[in-house]
Length: 504
Image (cartoon, rainbow, N blue to C red):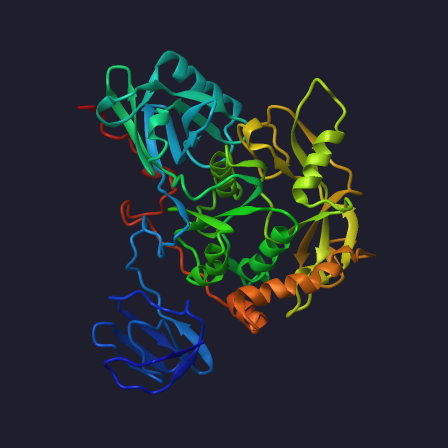
């Protein structure tokens, strides 16, 4: 659509941009660009330069390119937008248990089920990443020696904290009154038996937003990477609609504090349709994490937060499928859920339950610009080394990016004749990876191209290709420090012991 640059100042031109090219009100920016010096005064709506704009416009045209006026007015712990399907807004915290043991609490998820009601705390020791065996033993020893309790306000309903899993990330649990299941927010104090508080954390979850689903999927934070010619914003809509057409009923999407301002407009059609529920993490995107952090840490946090939100709502969950990975069901007359059920039934071991189904991945060349990804039939016939998978949430304690060990049952490696993952990864049409060539052809998904293009038209109108191409060009905001700490929120030096205090 056209944004008209007008306001209390004079008017000099138009800017052809979608809705996301907007600034936050009450912010000013000074930016030299090319031969222009641009000065924005939001209160007056005056800009000197080639185009005049006001507080409603973020971009002005300079020498044929769009220049971004970035503001720093947002609070780090406040999402830049709110939707009608916001499931939770999560802030992380640090807890010092003793002089040698600190926990980083990434998320807290309420779970109220027919068999158990508890708070699930997703954590790590010292920093991000999977716990080592020594770290796990240290935490277990501490919890055995020093009882730690979760309590409500004023020390109400104290319940002992327990370690539920430590395979990929720490999952701590404490029972919680089912009578509070209707509340959207819970404040949890962690305290010793004598009432001395060592930390606190908020758990949020809007209980009315999720229904009962056959299969759900988790969608980690999206971003654009022009260096690698990769755009999560470009491929997300076609990925979601493809899997919705093939039987995934609902999607939990995650946003971070360094998210693109284009995301609200990208997500809106799916929010309006009730297909998407959003969780906002007050954490930076991976590109903004310290170099010493594990690149998979944020993905582990998201996958496990999603797992506990799906418990009691989905029979199957796909926790870590990326938006360039398409689950292709080859089993005739089956959608995703039907295929998963068939795989579960076909495992012939009466003494064991199937808790997950794993799939081989094959690297596909990406489609040319202007085409949906599944229009590319060329792939490398060597499978990738790691498998992606689906799990039964109620039989799973924690998940990893690839096949998980945190299952109360077996993971069935399903035959690729019946289901496989197409991984549309490389931008070139022939070269897939070093020494590996797209030397094979699989045209199975070409029949889905018309229906997927119709879905894109339904979501974004006749000019959907142009819209998605614009999403591909959306800039990523610069990484921000945590203003509360004055430095990056994940660096280890900010893990200072909290002041101990008594519950009143």
